[in-house]
Length: 340
Image 1 (cartoon, one colour):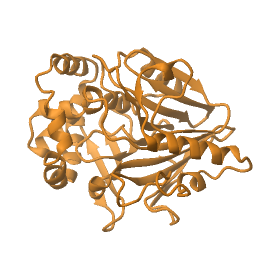
Image 2: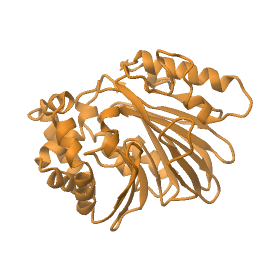
Image 3: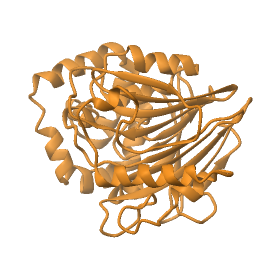
Image 4: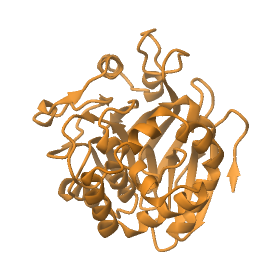
């Protein structure tokens, strides 16, 4: 079932086996995926890696470690009428090609009721088939997540029935290697039962590409920022309000070679300056800031390849996660929930 008005962020409810979930997600996006994604340059560039030995090894690792998510990818492939191996490779795109377009900003506010706020910046051409997906897999944990067309959930922001919140930022690390792809690790976070389990998953898994992940859980006052690459993983408990964009900033791991775009640098600087003014922090005031006309935090300029597709704010208390999603700056949320 899909809901949503024309030009606004929709919602989709999917249930059943992992394969069924993949089929439903694929059908939701099939028209746009073929007319826009497959017809575009990014798909072709990723498919150039079909014969790379590293891809074969990574596919075997995924099939051994994450069989349920392979079924979701098989369902996507069936609904989109594309080869399974190509759909699997599509989920490796941030690992085999370390410089895909970047976006996203996260505000982390610790306290007795931690707050995570996140701008999801993505290709505006995909927006009509992006959605908040409410997913209830047979034998797995239910969750709600922002989804992109043709991809399993877990690469943007999400909250699970265990009260776990995750938000993801792209990191353009240069030294990707053979390991589990970052998108599938993001999906695996949604099946974790505890905050510690989620942190352990990222620390101990063989990793390929790089992500920054913010993690929190209802009933736990801790708030973590995790930066991981193929070779390293930095877990930092957030002790004061911080901003994060699309490059590594943790001591030690930030020395690894990485792409730091002008936009990422500007968003981090501006967000940190706004936080540094003190007083009560309203994450929306920060994430919707446009004071830098060329490289704003809230991205919606026609000349910008990426736009802010959604802004999510999560308040994590002792019993539940209270969250809202906005698809237009300055307007009421398009979705709110007292809990998942």
